[in-house]
Length: 206
Image (cartoon, rainbow, N blue to C red):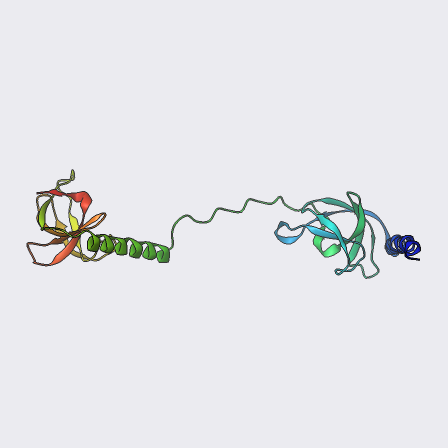
């Protein structure tokens, strides 16, 4: 009994497709293009119903020949590859849609929040390094750079984002180092008696 039902069911499915095609309103063959927003692909379905089985997807920009419409005019009957089925007319255009443009690369410039986070991470790294690398005794450094007339900053924390304690540090100024980080030195300022931070790149041992 079951063997007899299988051909009957297959015949009914084929008949259903044929009847749906026959129900399309006569309109002649017209050319349309898949024009889904955002460059999406379009389902081609077995029946003019969004819940009907999908045979597959038709890519954006594909040219289609619509040979008939559903009774409500919302679906068009067409062929694509080996499929014969229905597509939603609202995703078609009579004009060829514009070619897709490449998605622009994200802005590589970090946001203020990202910069603040990076500065905080670098500052914490410097403090951890200074706590780990204890000095046996303080030593002195001198400011020595190729820019003989430049002014440098003594900062309140080991970060270029930190506020300046002094902004008039010049070549020849001497400071006493009390802690050493990865890129920064903790120093005592002989002029003010305050403790601040200098970047290693502008100093050398004295």
